[in-house]
Image 1 (tube, rainbow, N blue to C red):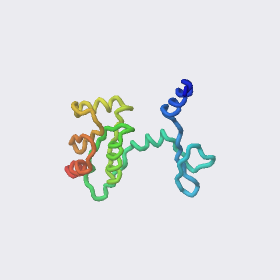
Image 2: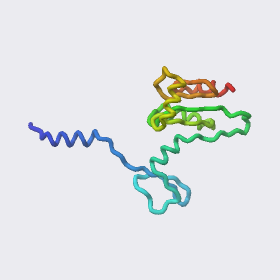
Image 3: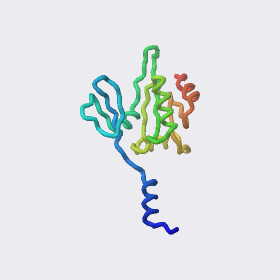
Image 4: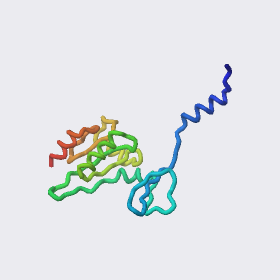
Length: 148
């Protein structure tokens, strides 16, 4: 059986090239959030994927009702790292304010990360109340947050 080489090339390109589509998050008049691949006609609010990604790296304000001093947290991350996402989710879940620095988008952040821990090329790198923590471990983060 002879297979046409151009057919093979077409098949390979179809399944190997990454696809790029715009994803929109929009809120209807009743306040319900929706996600879709096309921009809606009359939404109450619309955000595209790029805005959502930028928003996901923004710090969450701390709830300092019982806390006298908020912990200082700097997090060096990338947008694709699953452990970075877990670290961000942990901090948000616990209402801990943090500064996220994307080392792929900010060359100065990459330089600061390298200066903080020159022997560590992994991510995330957290600096919590002055303690440098490699990777993500919920218990290690909790211990560092407990120290003032």
